[in-house]
Length: 121
Image (tube, rainbow, N blue to C red; front, side, top):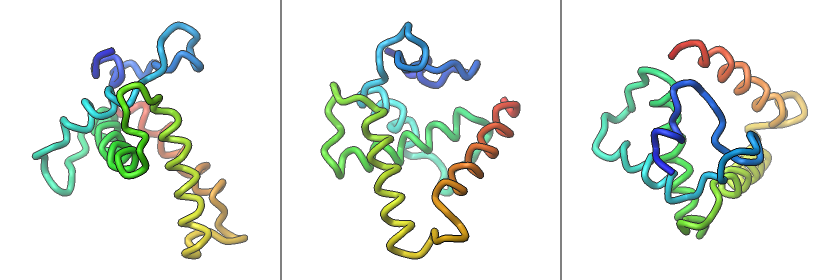
């Protein structure tokens, strides 16, 4: 699988569980995408959704390496699920979320940002 498939400009999902037609994205693809961020500007310049996906891949790759989910056969969605669960722990323990600002409300807000950004590319 190539990074072109993963970072499709037409925003088509690549995970077989979502489409029923493709293999699950493996961590070697995430590693390849993340490597394109090496040597780029800090902070990153965001010109569109491909840049957003590249930054996310970089963060996911760092997390996967730290947690041992970085094998080429490991499925990316497992790392994503574990990262989200760990973010939930962080938010709870540090008071980022509480009864007024729940993790679900953060995800809902992120979904609104995502939907708004779909039309930018």
